[in-house]
Image (cartoon, rainbow, N blue to C red; front, side, top):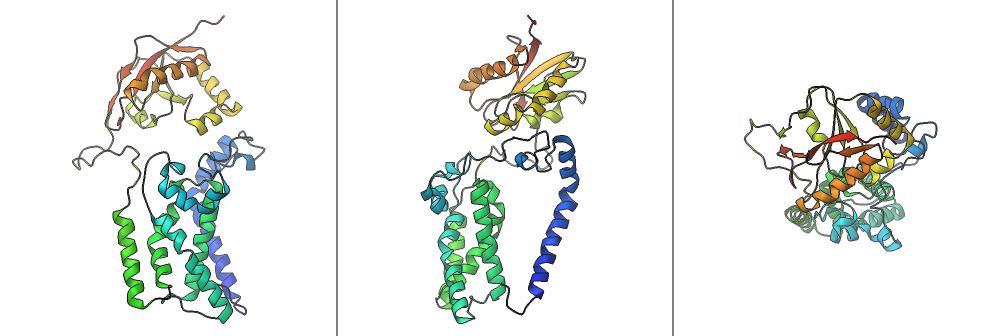
Length: 340
């Protein structure tokens, strides 16, 4: 990419890096400043350990549940996640693009070696510096993704670039041009028709005038209402359907988020909200399957008990909504337990 006697390439790379920094700060700078002021971590909820003076010092820096667990997985992770998709996502999916790019990665390595030995090379009609820059970006991006998260949906830049990457690397193969073009087209068609995207509970496309999200919230008390969000399933999408005066506090969540909620910063915030006078206390949770409702309710009751609260027996009401794919969310009245 950078040739001897070509200092302009370094200047261009520095200008590109500065442009990326300016773009990032222009779009996300305000929100990063807000997070820094509120939590002490401008990248919240990630990398709290990098900011020891913040409220979240010691917080889990990332979700490491999907990282490779053995040397074989580190070396062959695209092969592993292609045939065991649960290793890099919470839902089922099928996509052969990452595996295909992994197999084709030998092409830029081989072409780069030949180019270095012969001080030049042929890259299937692609300008050598473009070929080198694209290949280097893909390699470094993959290694960064693999070491930090290994979560499939976080590899979005590689997903978006995959057609260009596959076509570029296939065209650099030592084959006749017609064969290279045919192979590139055939492989791209194959990975397209065999793909099965992950389903996170999407709803069918309805009449264009219908709202995308609908819910019917039972009437709450006439005074101020505090709704406690519990359980491991998403419920925040229901917030906009409550009265404007209602307020919300999450007291439990999935595995990673629960580790944050146990930090002094969040526990103090939850306690401060509960100390305020609320005329109406509710808890909101949902379940994946109807037969699990009792288990989830008991889990929510355990979370409430930590704060001196309990669900009023027989007070739970189901909420109807078009995103309630696996069963209706439950809204229950909450009472304060007598202090001993």
